[in-house]
Image 1 (tube, rainbow, N blue to C red):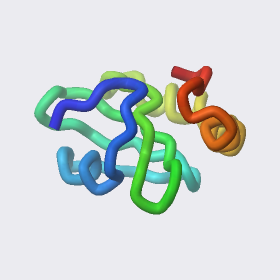
Image 2 (cartoon, rainbow, N blue to C red):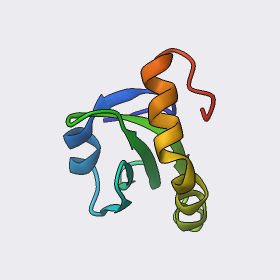
Image 3 (cartoon, one colour):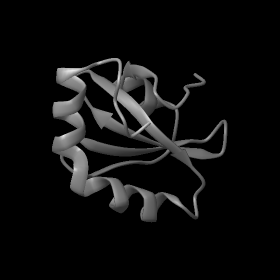
Image 4 (cartoon, one colour):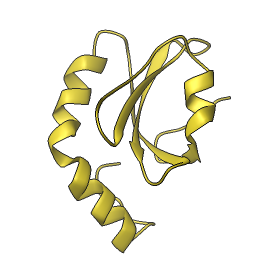
Length: 89
């Protein structure tokens, strides 16, 4: 399944497409996409849905994930208030 930055998808869909998924911080996932050779960084919106907030290479995933982590709650709140206009994308 090809996903794009900004897209809202089922959480299980991005978990299934790769060999690695990590949720070091509650609400933020990093999932490998083996088919496309990238990592999807996704913000959890509810129990089943996530929004792809970035797509990065293997060498960038750790840095970008930790860069976004402090803003998890802010991004989730922003999405709830305005689902069409999340500024981090």
